[in-house]
Amino acid sequence: MNRNFKKWTAALVPLSLSAALLFSGCSKGSTSANGGAATDSGSPAATAAGSQDKYDSLPKDVSISMFDRGQVSSDEGTYEDNRWVKWIREQSGINLTVVPVPRNQAQDKLNVLIASNQAPDLIWEYDRNYIGNLVSQGVIQPLDDYIDKYSTTYKKYLQENPDLKPYITFDGKIYAMTTRRTISSIANHGIWIRQDWLDKLKLKTPTTIEELIAVAQAFKDGDPDGNGKADTVPIVGYTTNDVYAALFGTDYYDWYLQDGQMKFGPTLDNFGDALAAEKTIYEQGLADKEYFTDNDNSRAKQLWTTGKAGILLGQWGNMTTSLNRDLLTNDPNAKPVPLEPVATKYGKFGLYQETPAYIYVTFNKDMKNPKAAMEYLDWLMDKGWFTLTNGQEGVHYKLVNGVPQQLDADKFAKEVKYANEYAVLKPAEEKPEDLIVKAAQDPLSQQLAKLEADSLQIALKNKFRRDIPYQPNITEINELKSSFLKTVLDIRAKTVTRKDYTAEEALADIRKEWKRLGGDQAEQLAQEWYEKNKANF
Image (cartoon, one colour):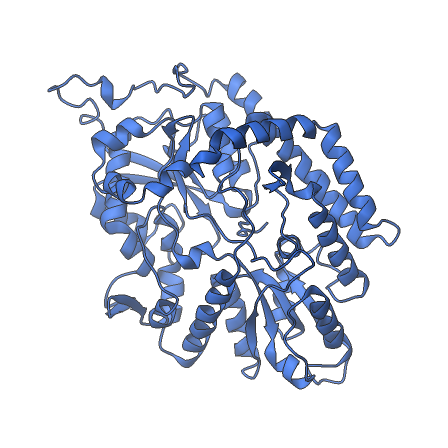
């Protein structure tokens, strides 16, 4: 789950965090009557009418977590100190401190910071389940009063987008701030195929899982790159487990409704069939044999960009565009095109797509100046996000019919791309054709932009199966899912790579382990949650 690779997986606060919070003394302050943690400094409602706000005398110091994706070049600085952090401080009037956490270990790193009382004022994630765990742990605080008293821009935005409110509400209180995803950030995963290989071997575009396997076999046997060697790898990927499961209408971490009953994804028949398909592909030599050990996806990316792979199970968007740029630079005659998800016996489903809510920004219960934090986020919503996303007009972009068009792709990639990480709230709107306008005007950038626009429409053509809009936030379920996920992934690797262990046996073992860990009780709790909340869906 790169989810990115969302990887958006549902990594959860480990059980050790509960003990760490308890013994480290992280949970200062009392617990409020509604189950949330009361702040040491109190809520804005505590300020007497007509008196000076107690936060006005405090420094406007705010710290925020940030995903470190390794995109800041050495001559730009670091995630903590660069042109954009300086710009934010100058323009917002807030003394912002950035606390980077590695993207692929973000939740683990945040948990350590929380347990050691070193967490920043503003903690954010894409994962609503993780935010729910922070609510349960008493790490973050309700925001209703702060939004009501200190916000103008965000308060208005939430009033205009009331459908976002359920995503940020826990136990009847707002615990996070979020904005609506653009269509290009709702799309996440995608499949790509070499159209030139299809053409050379006179193959039709596959539309079913059986046809996909047949095309992969032809890619293996037919020497589509024309070098006279049997050295092509039909299928590579860095979201393989997610893609196979999604094709069959399930995944590793979500609940589904089966005949009105809440069931966990890996326990469904669909999941067993997804394992069987992946096992067939692996055993027939149609996938790279090393993909289970390709932890950083470097081999998959190398095979695609050097023209040795025919089908890519990856992402929609920037990462794949970057890979396609390298592929087309190495081989200008290559024709990578997006492939619509293929049908299975369960029908046709979309690959992973995000929910409408974007990033969830929360307030550490121990923050000293929530008024300054709200002022910063309002500034970001009002003015800051656009520049952080697009750079400076005349330097990095020009406006074309109101759409910012990049002036130089390389300059943008180096000087601006990482800045988007700071725009944790942004009321952006977007159409597929905007991607073409935004891109730099050199031929390769325009070619890639057209591919990106086409792939966006294909990525959104079929809806990802999501029977409920968001997952239940119940401590017992979250803890079970956290421990159960490793079991599922271990069983998946075992059944795919071992000839003597069938997918049917794997599914039976998954269900057995689910029951042993308390799955029946989890299903009962999930059903009760569903019955209680379904009117809000």
